[in-house]
Image (cartoon, rainbow, N blue to C red; front, side):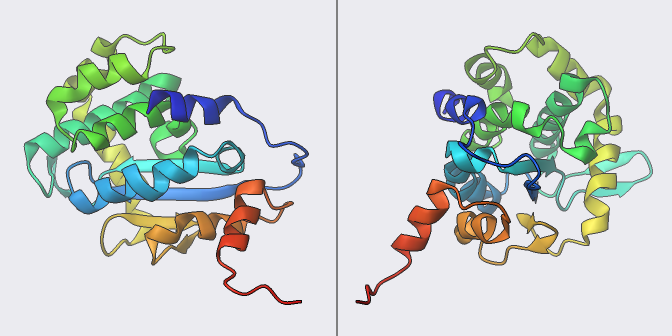
Length: 219
């Protein structure tokens, strides 16, 4: 897991033009919903593990989903454990930059991605937070205690930021996946949606995908 994402993180797309905008990929999800886990550890992980796709995507992931807010109380759809795991994933994005607005902008999501994927593969179990962090964030200068303390002491702060980021989407279900602002109805086809949205020269992964989708070879 860590090596797959790390390789993608350091790679560059040969010949990519800096003037071509990246594809904006937004994922609104809940940490303990199996459907979200299936997407994040499947199509999303596979796409982001491809170095040439990783480089053309700006990723934002917000763990909030169908959480309900009543005053200062946040109730997660699948219980308090989901709230805790959501908060851990949000807190890492917040603490990487020190700016709570990172939850809305997504500017630290890629750095937090190895931890998020580890937590998703652990079915959003908050007791796996420490082990996931030690396995996936070996290059981070942040201590895990910074993240866990945030999830406890800044819980309402990060949940409110996640609610603010999620509300404008008017999502109907999770995972709610947007590519350049457009809903991806078939999340299993995430890679195709990214390739279709990219306006620059097609990366090799997109070219291979186009070839794989052609079942006839004309003369």
